[in-house]
Image 1 (cartoon, rainbow, N blue to C red):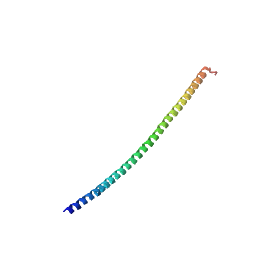
Image 2: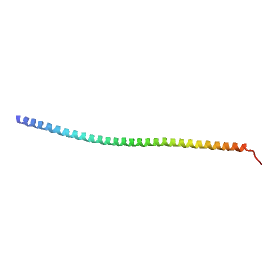
Image 3: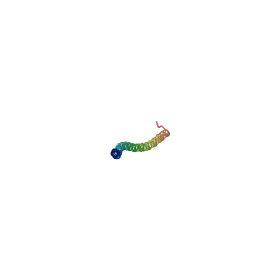
Image 4: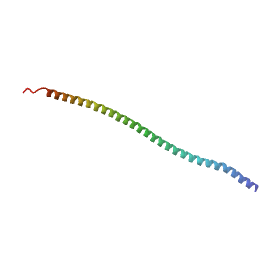
Length: 105
């Protein structure tokens, strides 16, 4: 009986490290799979961030272009307003000179 206990105890002592080894191997495999999944998720988030940054740059350029076009439109409007005022003054001045000259007929 002593030999049977010795053999069983030896088998148990040999089985524990093997069981721990396989347990660690399966846990490591699960952790590696989780890590790869998280890496894919991070890559996806990085791509989304880059797309948002690109969109932000595009929108910034668009806003600057609109502001510049607004300035140009204001300058054109001012120039046309000044020209219109000048033409109106010339027309009023011309009418005044025409009215001041007596008709010689």
